[in-house]
Length: 123
Image 1: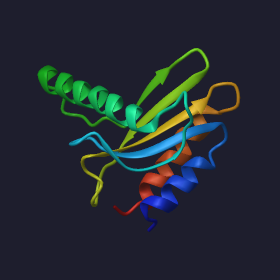
Image 2: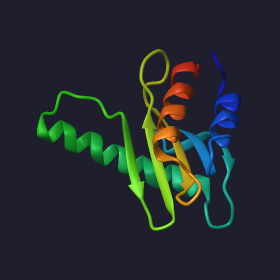
Image 3: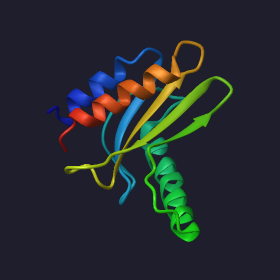
């Protein structure tokens, strides 16, 4: 098991990472962040992506879908934004957010690494 700080350090080590956060989507507040810069305010990203998660959960409920969101991918011209909802143990209500440089990142590998971080994380 790893804690929030270690999980975020591991996320920062994913090739092409610009920033990462662990977010409580009940409140929209990050439990921790790593990286970011003047163009990537992780607190703003946490709040905005909370709205994305809530909207998708509501839509699934309205559609009557009996499934779980694994991750949400937002593709920009120069970046990938990956939102991975946490499941199991104490992870309900949280998501990992990862912003990647599209030119340096391998999206498939980033998704696998984020899944491993989720599996090891204890909140």
